[in-house]
Image (cartoon, rainbow, N blue to C red; front, side, top):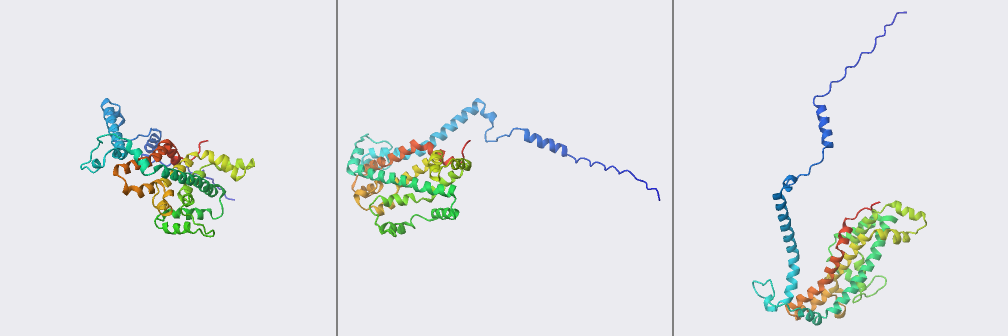
Length: 326
């Protein structure tokens, strides 16, 4: 046998570090550890100086005042326009202040246009539309979000597709439908149902509610199911209490939509005693002086403004709500 000589393995020379790799590593690490800087037109150092704070306050005040004037001026023009005489309204250039502040024109508008009847009719229509909207749209959104029926996504897509159809296109089919209800053969004209039922069929409200219901943790509902709660009990006791912000948004939008609608009530409520306030004012506008007409418009807009000022926080909270905090 021949003697075999075993040579030890040659050591593999270490690869020299790439030039600049250490600097890049240190630079990356320093960038991660360094606080993020926020750049703007004015540096924080400039804002901390007395001159910078003065300029900032002046700019902020001017912006707030200008935007407030832009949004408040139409309201002021409407309120003061009712206090002017017809001659003042026809004056060119127009005057910004009435010569006399006689608020009796509002009482005159209330009596001559019978605004009490029109307001009562509109409150009934808006209240019924609100109840039907919550009952139908909440149930549909809850079923699509949590019960997950067969072809639920297809149903939701068909509902959202209705939002792409202009309202004027479906005006005639909707009128023929309420004129002669399919299957039942009922004539709903001059009845509150002709306002309530179409208002409740709103794909946008169903989409808003479904998106909010999707954010509710499923573990919360499963825990209620383990305790023996039915789907209806889960909806009433768990889902609705945590959905108050979005319910407030849907409620306000449904009431405002009915209150400001004009074409549909004009078409389906031809009886003078069943008209809404917008249709009633328009039907009597040709017989009234200009200042009395403006006063009636001010009275008609007061309820919607009061609703907005009371529930404006609910509007913002509902539109920005998308998750639950644990």
